[in-house]
Image (cartoon, rainbow, N blue to C red; front, side, top):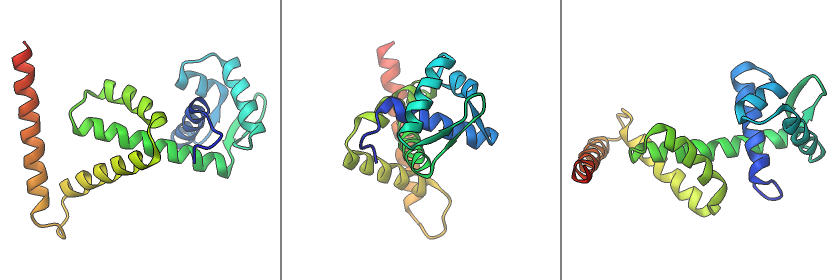
Length: 159
């Protein structure tokens, strides 16, 4: 999925995707705000992404994703959300989890990403109320509670 698309390009695609999901449309100023960059920087990237067939950009108008651009953006968002969720599971504060998920989404091998995804899905499914899973939710919840206590004890030892 990531072939020939830089991490920076992926960031822009994900930003456009998320803005469209929230507002129904995306404009340069929205992307500029989201990524904390100047509008001319966004325009330059939109032209590049348009040349690569990933977005349709209309000067002074909206930005839309092509089917390929949307496919890449969705994959990047899934990776980001997986890493953010994993970091939250291991009790990393949300603001740090958000930053670190961004780093991880661009750096890891696809096989590693797959295993992270499976682990997060396993934990998420196991802790959900599902009648088909009898004992597993209790065990996972207990494990999570014990891990939280363990972290709290280690934090106290540091103080």
